[in-house]
Image (tube, rainbow, N blue to C red; front, side, top):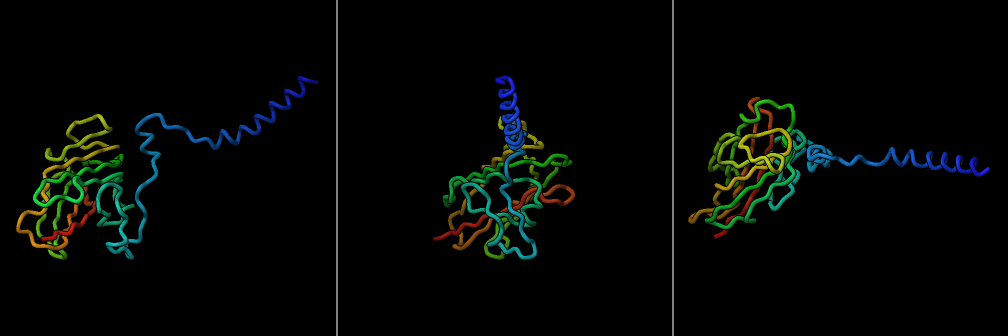
Length: 199
């Protein structure tokens, strides 16, 4: 009798535990799996209906938002973009930090271009085109790999050779845009941020 009751109890526990086990998430054990399981910080948008005010903002200490093609179509998924100091101090150097996930199975990452554009209103003041793999851009892969190359997966970029408004700059709104493209024209990332210069 006791054996029969124990058998019935174990069977009931097994039936209850099965759906619970099926719904329990698998805990990732590597950095790669952890990053791949993170929810996307980007939002799909309608490219035809999009206006600058409707572009998704980018997480971090900044006033940046996506530009160019819809964020969901950009290949480099941005986790954070930070400007320090924020806002920049006129006449002083400021730093840019970009963190995200570089796509797998994409060739020619090292040959990606990087374009910086400075605009005042609708007028372009300057455009600088370089390589994303430039030695002047510090790179880190997977938190502890400081080799100076672009790799697939988790990447961080640091840039410090940027200056805020110089003395004599006309007051107004100034927009910085950073855009990176693969050799075939597809966009890795494209975002911009605007600061107001006052006398």
